[in-house]
Image 1 (tube, rainbow, N blue to C red):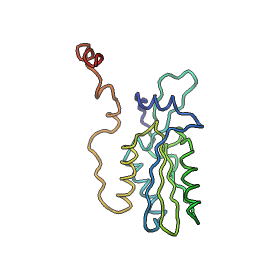
Image 2 (cartoon, rainbow, N blue to C red):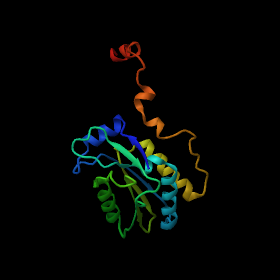
Image 3 (cartoon, one colour):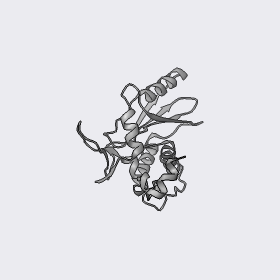
Image 4 (cartoon, rainbow, N blue to C red):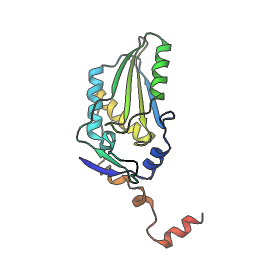
Amino acid sequence: MQLTPFNLLDDTFHNIERSHEPWSIHFEMRFERSLDAVRLSDSIRYALNHHPMARARKAPSHDGTTQFNWEIPAQPDHIPLTIIKADSETAIVEAREKLISLAVPTNLSPAFLIYLVQHKSGDRLMMNITHTVADGMSMYRILSSVLRHYAGVPDPIPDFDPISVRDLKKLSGTKSLAEFIPRATR
């Protein structure tokens, strides 16, 4: 199992999130037809296999821990798909509100949830991901892989190591005091 430390943004969101005030990102799509739940589950599995941070879960820690880590298991703990049959627009709203209100657990892989809300007017695909593990672009990338796989179209995966680009200081931090001073005085 691979370990990678929380970066500055992970730490920030981890420290400000509270169970009664989840810091998460919600994304929703409406389809004009029904989605096949088995194909969707397979497509979620595909995306989890191709995006390591999508499988991340917070490594065990204790009260005195100062540096948190992500564990990236070879396989997710579960496929985070819940099927909801909605018989009314009110039921769709209730599903959305329930999903948005959940604090997505970071100690399970993956740290996101997907609802497939089935309705006669067309299905809704709703995703809630904890901001501790991802930002909006990351969520979009995961969902793009799910939808491309579901549609049977190519899903170009970048040829760089997605874990190595998580070190924000290494990517954009100053390399010397001479570089730091102009940045600090702006």
